[in-house]
Image (cartoon, rainbow, N blue to C red):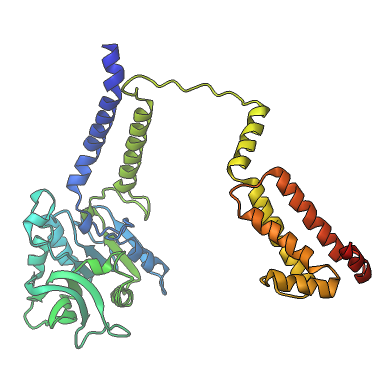
Amino acid sequence: MRASLQRYGPVAGVAAAFLVLFVLLAPSMLARDTRRDHSAFRKNAWGCAALAELCRRGRPALKVELLTRPLDDLGAVEGLLVILDPERPFAGAEVEEIVRWVEDGGTLLAAVEGVWADPSGTPLGRPPAFVALAERLGVQFPELGKPANGAAPAPGSRHTTGVRQVAIDTNEGVDVIPEPPNAEDTPELSADGTPVLVSFPRGRGKVVVSSDAHMFANGALGREDNLRFVADLLWRNAEAGSIYFDEYHHGFGPRVRVGSAPDPAPLHRALLVTAVGFAVFLVGRAQRFGRAVESAESRRRAPREYVEALAGLLARGEANRWALEKIAAAFRRRMAAAAGLPGAVADRELAEALAERQGIAAPETIRVLGELEAALGRPTVTSRRLAQLTQRVSDLEERVAGGSRGVARKLGGR
């Protein structure tokens, strides 16, 4: 039993760790739709934390409020109310309170994703969150002929300064049936002639509706002219200098400040790193299959062994021949320099030039050069022969470098 536990225990531990991790992460992973999480707390590509920061740092700065309670009492809300693709459905009391607040003079900016009307596109098959409010406002979202990836300011839009193209990602347009019938809507943004963002009056207030919420997200603000268009849209409609983001319908409960909301993503990453580290620890501590291999004892070699190895290496590498090649090349180079000739000159020409300029007999020079060439032509060079040739070369070089021409002739005639 103990042996089986030692062998299979680490594997069971790794499996148990990943099972616990799955149990902890599964509820939030199945309940959250990351693509639709356009919360002002989120800093991922789909979140809108950059939008909230833009409002706080713009000129003039907007007062940012995050509503983490049901929208059934908007009496204290004075400014622009922003609802970006809610994930939680609106209750009947909330819908009526939003409509009443707008009719009393409030300004509402609502945006949804193109999948909002598809029940299969919502988490766990829940009904679309925006249906009740859209019907009460008289807004419909007809399907476009093809998905739109870009839109331009519609004729008559006030948001056209410096805006040529806005990056969007939607399959639907916006169609408004305002009340009363004589209150016409104004297209602000259109894709291939179909409005995708419109504004229309409602009582003493105003409603701005978009069929694309991703244009407000962190990952889209830097594309095309999205930042300029969105900033102009917000500052023109936030007349009271305040902007309220609906966070309650993104799953947040009590009122919290920007950046302090419980984002499950860091927790998920921390748990995953912990599980992987624990798995690596278990595998590292695991007992290996098979018998352990004993390592040979290391011993220090005697100095004699190093000397013998070096001597054998020199013998195998023909060190004598290599040394003779270097000596012959250096000798020819020095003799040619003394004769005022290039190094690649023929032996006879080199000998005659040395005889003329240095007084050394040409036969002697030819003999030394011939002996060097003959020795290099043999497979091996003995140490004795190497010493003899080195002595001959050294004597001839000393005669060239040292004595006068007369002394050199005298020595050469002997």
